[in-house]
Image 1 (tube, rainbow, N blue to C red):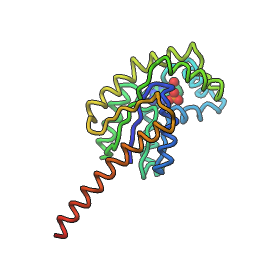
Image 2 (cartoon, rainbow, N blue to C red):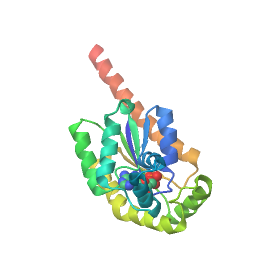
Image 3 (cartoon, rainbow, N blue to C red):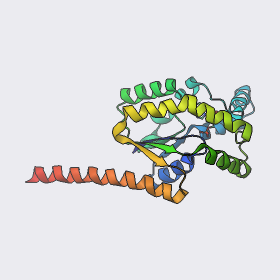
Length: 207
Ligand code: AMP
């Protein structure tokens, strides 16, 4: 199962990506988490990365494309993946679309988390006191939302058009368990339709 999650920071897509990846036994590829893991080292690169991320800016497309290429080519993704936080810019989207075409990777679902921006601000502030993320303060939230509107919203729009048959909007203001149910309902429903057509095709063969 190959899935992409889109949504603004604080929309809860990371939480859901973790839950659904666990439920489906597939890899959860959070580019934010992958980058945060690189911050622990004490070299020039980590310092530069820390500076970019804590200011709410985006890290370079080249680095992100490289990280994702390595991950998608690794055996961790053989059974599938949920991409959470990538692609986030139009150049990343172009790169990713070419990559999946060249590697004959078929996406199963695109989920786009929609939520009111006022709700996001209060959610991120709550998260900042719990997780102590340096990019979760009021000054940085505005920049991250601004980046989302300018850079990532056009990407989700382009996926809505290119992948219209597998594109789904998720109402992200609901409770965590409700959103999880909504996601699994969509996934199970089309899986059952797939199974039915498989059974129908099989019955036609044996008759
Ligand atoms: P996230 O946890 O997804 O909110 O990501 C945290 C930070 O990591 C972002 O604010 C960016 O600085 C960086 N980041 C994560 N994914 C990407 C991406 N696809 N492109 C550029 N920067 C990214």
